[in-house]
Structures are given as C-alpha cells and as structure tokens.
Amino acid sequence: MITKDSVERRLLSNHLQGLLPEGLITSDYGGYSIDSIPSYVRALFGERIERGGELLSLLPDSLPQRVVLLVLDGLGYMHLARILSEFPNMFLNRLIDGGNMLPVTSVFPATTATALASLSTGVTPQEHGLLGYRLYLKETSAITNMISLSLLGSDASDNALEAGIDEKTFLVHPNLFEQLQGIGVSSHVIMNKQIAKSGLSRLLYDGAAKMHKVVNLSDMLVATRDLLNRATTRTFVSLYWGDTDDIAHVHSPWTDEFIAELRSIDATLERELAGRLEDTLLLITADHGFVPMNDEDYIDITKYPDLYNNLALPPVGDTRSAYLFVRDGKKEAVMDCIAETFAGDIICLDAQVAIDAGLFGMGGVLPESRDRIGDLVITSGGRKTLYYPYKGSVKLRGMHAGLTPDEMLVPFIVGKL
Image 1 (cartoon, rainbow, N blue to C red):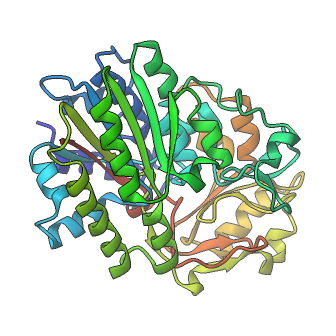
Image 2: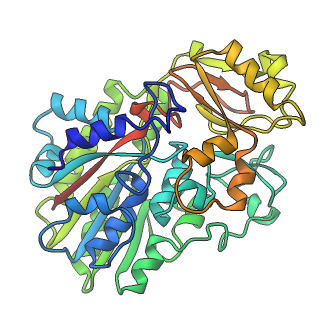
C-alpha cells in the first residue's frame, strides 16, 4: 500500500548513485516528482500517459470535469506538515482528509524557473534546458536572468528576446496547455498581473486559452470560481501564488510571517472555493522548499583568488547550486581547491558525471543543456553556500535550489472542492 511515509522513505534514500552524502537527496524523476504532475493532469482528463505512473494511485474513482492546479511558491513538504500538525483546524487538513497528500521531489536545481518549466512541460531539466535563475546562454552570449529574460548589466526586462532568445522555440517540448488543447480541454492561467507579464511567463504559458491577470489572492480565487462556474466544457485552470516565496526569502521560512501567509491562503481557499464548485478537483503543489540562512552562511567566492581566478565566468545557476565555467586546464585545480577549502560545506561534481548519474533528469539531454551546465556543478552540503556578489544581490534570510530535504521535498495534495 502506498502511504506518505513509504513514499517519504523512498525519496529520502535517493543519493544519486552514491555521489551525494547522507543528508542530501536528488529528484525522483518520472516518479514521485513534480515533473510527473502534468502527466497526472492529463490522466485526470482521460489521456493515456507514459510517465508519472506512480502518481496514478491518486486518481479519483470518477474523473472530474474541472481541475485546478495551485502552485504555492516555496512551500516545502516538511514545513507544511509541521504547520498542519500545529493548526489542525486548517482547511487544508480537511481537504487532505477527504483526498490525499504525498511528498514529491522538486527538480534540480530546486528553483522557480527550472521547476515551473517542468510543471509546464512535464519533462525534466536536462530535456527542457531551463536550468536555473541565471544562465550563460550562447543565444545571447551573456549571463541571462531567466525570470525577467534580462541580460546581466541591464535593468530592461525581456531584452534577451532581442539578443537571441526566441520565446516560441526556447522550450522545445509542447507544454501542458498545448497538450490539453489537443484532447479538447480548455486551459487557463490565472496569476498576479506583475508576474503574468514577466519574460518567464511568456515562455511557459503559450497555448493556454487565456492568461487572466489579477491583483491579489482573493481576486485570483474569485476569478477561478467565476470561470469554472461558467465553463461548459472540460476545463483546466493553472494558478500560481508567489507571496509565500517572497516572505520566506525576506523573513526566513520558519517564521510567524510565513505561517500567517499560509493560514491566510488557507482561509481564502475555503471561503472562495470550498463547496462552491461542481465536479472540480483541486491539486496543490510547490516549486521548491526553503532553508533558513544567516549572513555567515554566505561565502563570498571572490575572497578566494585560487578558486575565483580560475573561473572563466562568475558562477551561474543559483546561489545554493551553481555551474562553474573554468579556465582551460584548471578543472582539477578548482575541484581540489573546493574540496580542501570547503570540505563538507560545498559539494563539487564534474558536470558530465552529474548528468550521467541523472542529477538533471531522464531522457535525452539537449545540447543547449550541456552547454549551460558548464564544467563543474557545486551545491551546498548544508547551510553554507558559495556566493557571488552580483550587482543588487542581497543575503536573503531564506534560500533554496540545494539538495537538502527541506528544499527538495514539496507537497502534492489532491482534494475535491
């Protein structure tokens, strides 16, 4: 019998063929992982699927006409479980009691751009190529912010589109919205109007029947209810809420501020949706979890010249997991320097070894993915992280993108509204 405890044990035992130390885990690609959720959604609408079979145990006895997927940015599974235990009267507890909740893994790196790309396409990072917050792209010949699609040194959003990114072809796999359109399901995206106009949103949500722009959470949920109550055909609605991520970054995740935000979301969900929709299934998940950070956890890589001067570029990717492009002939020297200087705090893997072991996914590796990963992959062994002081960057109180269970495990909740 599949239980959340048995799934959790499976996920906590995945150490990337022994390449990762105890305490770090990798993604359960194609299984209990967020890249399987798009296949689950398609199965809810009656389509036969080839990936994500483990999640099919959560299929309801009768398939719904309407499905809502809510992504709560930064909501870790373990953190949520603690909050639900502390506040047993929350709506989410009742939703789970009438449905189910399992842990699933995020992808690597456990960061918004990469995770949302997998949630949009149903494929793994090495297959879609959106491998982090900042990437060096051959298309732009520059380090590029993958949220705003802006080039390093520029404050202008979307100028990467002018420099060489084609928003129609950057993600080569059809997304969930296009796939649902092919089986006669109308799909909609509802999100904050500021996020809806971001460069990343332009990449991810093409194919939806409509992008609905809202101003706050209650507006989002009222729009969802009104849309579904007017729907005359099978309908899928994708929701994204980012304030949980903002609060965890600024205040740290394990704080009263985060709990207050989650309880507010919980109450608004119950008030606006529960019992007010017919034949509708609600799915809730997250892109990643979080770990708390202090100033002393940030190690400025520029303070270590034997390491930094052997790099051809500043580290790219994310703060807690990054890609190093090293100068010719210096790879071994950089690996040795990291091992000797940051033993246990920073894990360093040869990029090709990491790819071959499955760190970035399953299936084919896009040539662009191989180019973007560079020569070495580094990730935090605990709280410490190698930090490059990009202009405007700050030492946030909460971070993600690493391989700790708090960052990697996220909830997958299925419940009838």
